[in-house]
Each structure stands twice: as structure tokens, then as C-alpha cells.
Length: 594
Image (tube, rainbow, N blue to C red; front, top):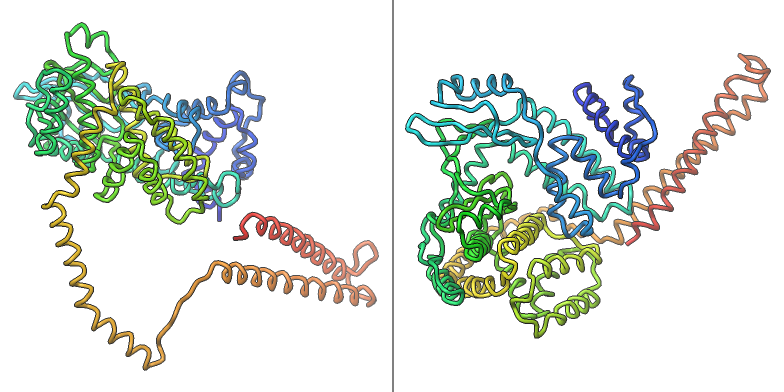
């Protein structure tokens, strides 16, 4: 059952490629433990088990990163998702995963041309007045070409690589099975919640394969910035600009489309495999020398970037989940453009409120507030609450009296997640994206302005967001929603009680109570009964075989009755299976007993 999907003919080639890469990077033992070698040998695919060379001398996390790069687009994207799980992996692993660059050689242009012709309904040279066959950039999923429309507008054409979906789907099937093995078959690795991580990754990657969804994300974020006033970021002294931004946020006018640029989407030529967007003629976020040469103000850019991302997170609940320098451009008048909305984060109103409380608790050194939020996130996980509270109190106390401008909020979040990791607690997937985005944001902001006071910039924005959460109109709206739910509950109560009484009268009322200890006991009794039955059958076979051995006549082997020997062989196999089953059961009991 485990490898049924993998032994399908459509996956064998890809499986052979993955196993070969793992062996080459020094993970041959993993290939054997996973059963890949047996599957491929059964299918007639030979593996080369030569000793790994220099790669084996690297640290494990470095070898994993290089193996992910070589295994292709799915695994590069997986590494990028793992880089967001700061709650699961130690910092050295996060650093390696963050090095995964989505840059690969471009696909041959004839293949791109053929696919573009299918999607656009005509060859690209007929659709556009100009089309550059040399890509601006090439990633694992897509590559980007520059073009010009009939009206003279400069655009970029993002094309999904031909055949990439087939490879991705095969990899996802393999990863799903692998996650199941890691989580259920190895107690040392099960706490990493592999099935949840792979589930999050699968959902994210399939959305990223749909360029139409990416463009809808871009337009949603653009709409969230449309109604804001540019005056919040007019050139002022740091304190004036800060106070004005705070005031503007309280009135719902802190940004402007003229300050935060989101590329326009041309839907006429956009589909699942291709998207056409406005070309951003700006300075790449990595080229800080060009920023200085253009006379842009680094401090203004840093403050605007921080405020923009905080707004997306705390106000909109829909944010760019990967705001690294490669996805940011700087334009004249200190404007900022965001591109590539394939990975976005979504936060519910309740989650945003929890994040605001957490960030305020960290900035204002209020340990009880931080602890309450984190304990709420742990859900049903077993946790030593007293120990966790004490560690958080100690952690927060070290920042008491420290000036805001000396507090690195991103580092605080990373250390806080380290505490959770020490307790083997993990964050919900939506929060993992937030933590990664915020930590990346601070790193990029401090590259622009080493003296960036991100805590000082965030504090008034968070305070206003918290006050907005309790504004009379907002509270009234929530109250009306609760009242509506309560009214529906009360209205349905007579009918529900009537059904309950009718079921009781007819003797159809079922009461379901599930207790962990009773379930555990039931499982133990079921396993014991199964082993007892097998033991009785083995004993019966032994007795019957012994009787046959005393009867003369019939076929023989080595001078002994053949059927008696077969009976003894079956009894031996059954006895060995029974001993192994008892051994595994005892080991599982020690690991899983509640």
C-alpha cells in the first residue's frame, strides 16, 4: 500500500532520478530505509551505489539544501516553505533553506513559443508589437520575457515552464507518502508534523502553478492600497513623519497607490499558464549602490516598506509572504514596488488581533500577554505550562529598560519561536508565513537603514490597530454578528429539543463518549486477542503436523512426510511473525502510552 502510487509507471522515472540524487549527496541509507531501492530494482532500474565524494564532507543541512536544488522545482519550493517554519527547524537549517534560489536555466524558446501560441491564441510576435525571446529571469516554475503592447505599454510576460505540472504532481505524490512514513514510522521525526507541512506546501505550490490566482492576489493587494493618502509619507523629520503616519492610520489613510506600486494585470492575455503584467522600471532591492546613485532616501524607503507590510498584516490580513529584496523594486520619489504574489499569507480577524497583542507584548515587555497568546496557539498539544511561562518571562525580562531603537523585533520573534521549538510546539501554518515575512522584512529594512527603529515604527501602528479593533463601530458590528448567531441558535433550540425528545422516546438516542484511556485499553485488548488467535492457530498446526509425521504413506521429502514438513514450516513462519508482532507492540506501547 505504501509504495503503490510510486510503483506506477508514470512515477518510476522520476523516482529513479530522486533516489540517484539522494545517494550522490550521501543519503544512501535513507534511500534504503524508505524502500526506494527495492522498488526500483523490482522495476528493473539499477541504482549506482558509489561512495559519495566531497559532498559527503559538508554539514547535513548544506547537503540537504544542495540535494533539494538538484531535485528540481518542487523541492526548491519545498525548501522555501521549510524556510518559513522557524518553529520546526534550528536557525542553521533556516539559513540553508533560505539560500535556495529559484533560478534555473531557461527552457528552450521553441517550447516556450509553442505553449505561448496555444495560450494566447496566436504567436507572441503577432500579439505583441515587440517580444524579447531572451528571458529577463528564469525560475523553477516559470520564466519572464519582456514585451510591448500596441499602445506602447511595456509589459512582462510570465510563462509557466512546459511540462512542469506533470513533474510537480509526481513529486507531490511521492512527498505525501514520504510524510506519512516519517510521521507514523519514526517517533524521533514525528514531532515535525510532516503531513501538515507537506499539506501546506501542496496547497501553496498548486496555487503558485496557477498564474491567474497569482494575478488575483496582486489585484487584491493593489485594491487594499488604493484608498490611502500619499500625505502619510511626505518628507518630514523622522518624528513628524512617524506621528503623521500614526494619525493617518487611525483615519484609514496611511498609504497610496502612488507610494506603494503593484503591477497592473492585463487580463486579456492572462490565464493559468501565462500572465501579462506591467513592467516595473525600477532599481532591484538588492542593488543598494544604485539606490544611493539615484539619490533615493534609504531611511524613507525603509520606513515605508515596514509600514506597508505591517499594514498588510494587521489591517488587511492579506500580505506578501516573501518580501525579500528580489521581490522589491525602488522607484523615483522613494516609491516601492512589490512583485511576485505567488506566495501570500492570509490571517483571520481573530488571528490578526492575537498577533497585535503578541507584538505589543514583546515591544512593551509584557510577558503575561505574550504567554497567553502563545498558549492559545498551542491548541491541544501537551505542554508544561509553568515551565513555558517561566521561560517566556525570563526572555521578556531581558529587554526591560532597553530603548526601543535597540530592540530588534525580528530577532525577538526568532528567539521566541526558539522557545516554542524547545517545547516541541509548532505554529499554525498561517502564522509560520507571518513569522518568516516579518523576519525577512526586518532584515531588508536594516540593509537599507542600519539604524532602523523597527520597534519604534511598529509600536504606534500596532497601538492604532488595537484601538481600531475596539472602535465603537467595529465592536457594534461584532456585537450584531454575535447577536445574529445567538438569535439563530435560540430560534433553532425548540426544533432541536423536539428532535432530541423524539429520539429518546423511540429509543434511538445515542450517547457517544470517547476517553483516551478506554480507547488505548480497547486497542490493547484487540491486539492481544489477535495475537492469541494466531498463537492458537500455530499450536493447532504444530499438533496436526506432529500427527501427520506419525502416519505412514503419502508423499515424502528427505524421508519425512511432506505435509508434516509443510505444517512445521507454516508454524515456524507464524511463530516468528507472532514474536515480531509482540516485540513491535511492546515498543509502540512504550512510545505511545498516554
